[in-house]
Image (tube, rainbow, N blue to C red; front, side, top):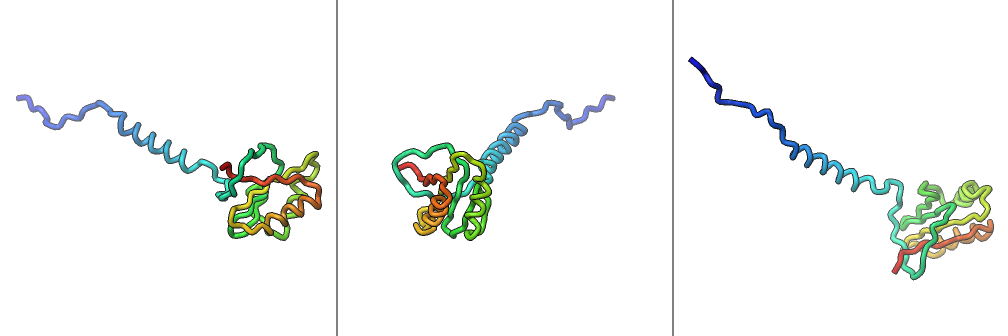
Length: 128
């Protein structure tokens, strides 16, 4: 007498579920790793171009926090940090990124430091 089992396991393997998981992981990592060190600033609008050459970037956000090359510093020590960062540069250039809501006196204080030390300042803006 021959007995046959009713439960037969199919040895076939479907790759569609594995492909879906890999695709979802790819999308997740692409969305979360876009630029971890970038500051999210809402720059003022203006016509013209920004140059791509820069030695140091200074950013001021709406909470009046200062960043030199994406590193948060105290506003009192900005001149010291700029001198350290631009030491030995031929044409020292600062790109100033100040949010729209930042008072002009904050941006002018950075420009004054640059003028005193003979640094070139470029104000970063959003294109219109």
